[in-house]
Length: 194
Image (tube, rainbow, N blue to C red; front, side):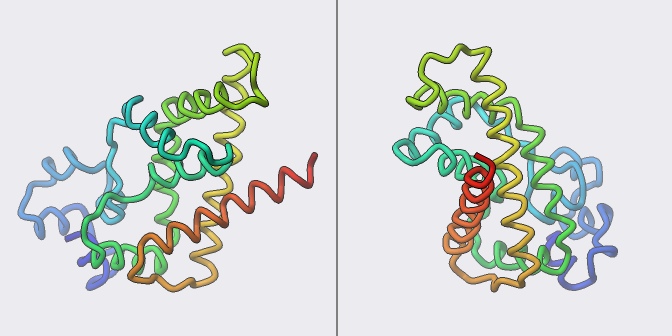
């Protein structure tokens, strides 16, 4: 409903009241599901990210590089859970028209920072380069990697929007493109400063 309203009437006219009316719910009920109209438009919810879910995702990306695993985790968290590729395409059109909405995804990652850095710390414990490091040493390393990779994701998404990349029907192609670019950005910067 929210996405349809934005595409039809524009972002300014897609108010919480308008979205609630279109969905036939009260504004009070709306706020049981979303924190803002922007979250409703993007499909951003405040899911409880369990340690088990993080562990499952990390296990699925096990064997990949550290940066690759972290970037993949971050994109997994911000990717809206939609089963409809048509809804996904509509959201992509809205984001292209209103790139300021992307800040909501970064805010979501920040809200989940503790859980995400705990997952990153688990990755570091398995990485031979961090072997023997104490938890007190691993925690700041996880925080730095979280910040670095979050920055890579943010810049990759910003470039994607700025360059006007086509929103294709293939959601995975878009996500793969963003993931590759975020990894490339992180690797380029870290290589130059070594």
